[in-house]
Length: 509
Ligand code: BG6
Image 1 (tube, rainbow, N blue to C red):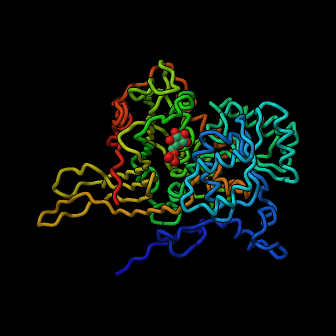
Image 2 (cartoon, rainbow, N blue to C red):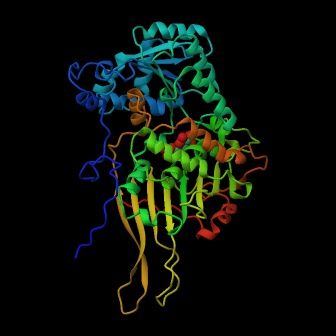
Image 3 (cartoon, helix red, strand yellow):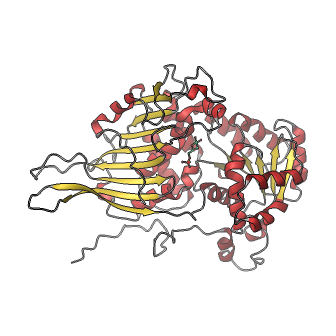
């Protein structure tokens, strides 16, 4: 007999039929937008301006010779070019002494071109360079000239956050903000007050829908799949609440250290680097109410409600750690009190989640590199079987990366034999998608198209700062931990009543 479950009440996600590994839901590309946006459009091979009146018509990259540009942005631009989605000038602005020719060479040297030479040949003539100081008016006059006829530039600020206000102000003064959009890298501010001040500076020059605050976790397939899995399956909703969920854990672990980013990292620490943004966004994805639509604002509205319902972190609910050897890293203050690990117990003041601990932790130089969510369900009300109490209750485990996306459901089944005793098994489903777009490719493409759904809104950023604010700049030194461990032993107390922290198991193939 086959039992049919009820369908989810609303189709919040576009239906795509088969959801197997290679045929995931895709938002329409620029090309698709053009195909569906009515008669009278020029041929598809024209530039983006012709394809979609709302798309940006130039990309201006501040910080064009920086680490982020090299590691993330140029590979993303190459990937967009490879898919035929980058047909506009890319103007880098930096202090370095390049001309356009040398700059193209620099980008080429920094890209892995295997299999992408044609794409680079298409990208290269579009690359241009403006040399100048971010604080000097002359830089912006030169930029304005270089933009020429372009009327809808997208400015990407891949620069240290303390330079954001000056750049935004100079863009405004030099008449560069008309029709423009702006992308900002995290961390967005250092605390609630500075985030508010930065938002105020931005809002003087840009409308909120033209501001794109990057949190690349929002564009990860695996993170989007959390929302998809929750709301495309009616079976979860009855148990997704305080009646059936005993605790929720989120671990973002890295087995490497600060890797040449010592000076930057030492100015932020784990709470500002990943907790305030990536981890709280995952919590919001797990805890939000079902949005009634999937468009930009419905989902973001629900997430803001959760972020606002999270209690600001109490001192007793956080353990900060620092790996042994951190103070000797290049660029790090030898006396640094900055945390490279944070474990936090969160409480959400919402009807659905009252009393359910959300335990989150993140750290560098831990025992493994893995991002994982474990939703632990309550135990059966009675222990019917004559066996020791199983060590774990049922759970849902979501592996969010780095290399694979997996969902596992932990259950008990009867062990073969005469006795009614069981064993723990996992129903495991893994989806490896090497061809999935990198989050930066997706985000840059979306920002160029003016689609803000995967970007953080002002209220969300501020609500997240409000949560972490009491834990910032603690004068108490962090606890030292051994590289290769799971952080300071002190952190276990936070999860004691939830059966301890779950170490992400090694990836299965
Ligand atoms: C970045 C942090 O935002 O996210 C890094 O600045 C961290 O410190 C990185 O390593 C993790 O991202 P991912 O995509 O590798 O999980």
